[in-house]
Image 1 (cartoon, rainbow, N blue to C red):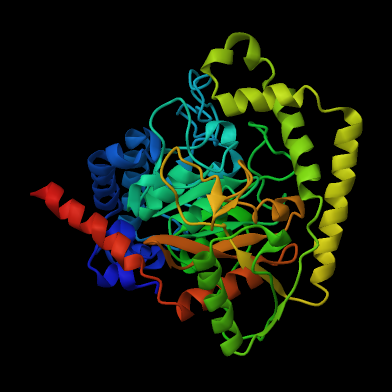
Image 2 (spheres, rainbow, N blue to C red):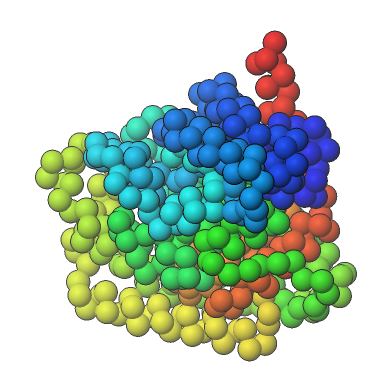
Amino acid sequence: MAGYYRMLNADPVFWPIKDLIAAFVSKELSPVEVTNSTLDRIAAFDGELHSYLSVTAEQARGQAKAAAEQYRLGAGPFAPLLGVPLSIKDLFDISGETTTLGSLAYGQEVAETDSTPVALLRAAGAAFLGKSNTAEFGQSATTDNLLGPDCGNPWDPSRTSGGSSGGAASSVGAGLASAALGSDGGGSIRIPAALCGLFGLKPTFERAPADASFHAMTEFVGSGPITRTVADARVLLEVLLSRPFKTPNDKVIRRIAWCPAPENHVIDPEVRAAATKAVKMLEAHGHVVEEVSLPLDGWTEAFGPLVLADEWRYRRHLLEEYKDQLTTFVRKSIEAGAAVTEEEIDAALRLKQEIGGRVAALFSDYDIIVTPTTACSAFPLGARPAEIDGKKIHSLWGPFPFTAPFNVSGSPAASVPVGLVGGMPVGLQVVGAHHREDIVLDVCEEIEQGITFPGTEMAKRWKQLAATSAT
């Protein structure tokens, strides 16, 4: 799968990172050429998608020029992302650029330093194309705010890209970045990855912190990659986590706990069927699969009070000066946080620890847990569904009930694409024990290689648009 974008003879921004780096080393391509080409694509296509809140063209060109000079001098070994163009979610600071946090209340000040993950990517040689669109303060599973239009899905811009890292996923899907930095406090990497047909991974809690400069979902959030392939994610994870994640030489038979509908939530039958097909493929490959019920009850009682308490603690001052410039959802969240008591916070922290223990205990018997990533495929912008399969669902969590429990447990979790439903992508969620991102990556890569996901159709769409634009 890793090579199908290149087989399309697509723009190099679609190439696997290892191929792009090899082309830079051989001087087949220049980082300046690729960065300029990608900036041209952003100018041509992002008016339809709104995947970026700001484009940092000057910084990107400077980084690309510096990378090209290093390749010209040939003094390797080269940094692992030298010259690779990335998008950075606008919850992270880039030195010399503004950070909006997806809010009208911010964006007036220029950041003096990089957020920690950004500093790691900068040291690895990446070129920063811009700040990708995000839900205000990362608080929603769809990417909408008051800064501009909602972020569209690269498969169909009239549909949601998910959230809150929806701009990150949209930028990668449409070839407006080679890969993206996102963050995930309740599914904000995995949900957009699933809805946009991409791979996204949330590491073990606290292994890749989002950053100390912006506080939200502090008990749950971390940074991670959104990429086209597992192989690309390995490269970014090695940078973000400062440890190797090489593809193993030998296959290992895994014990897999499969839950097709955690907590019996309503799920689109076609989404369930796509996830089931992927699991059966793993079973056919020799892995031991057992259908289980997951001990996740109580996660909302742990998640909700702690998230709302953070909103009140860190953003209550906005209600005085910026109340009318906040989305209704964020304003109500901050206001609701005022009612959370210290006793409720303490109880939520105890419950979080208990749920983490329950999930950890499963890994005595299993190597991996798999579930669908979402309960449905991408829906029209601004039209979150009230029903799935004719059954009423929760107004907030209904389309996305399966990701946040693993933020509560702190487990590493990923979404890998497994098929299309109504012409839109859906994903399988793969969850590992703490600090076992390696197993998550290995299983996802086997799924990726075993399933012919029609990602070429989306890549072809943007290639054809590029050809039309050029003429």
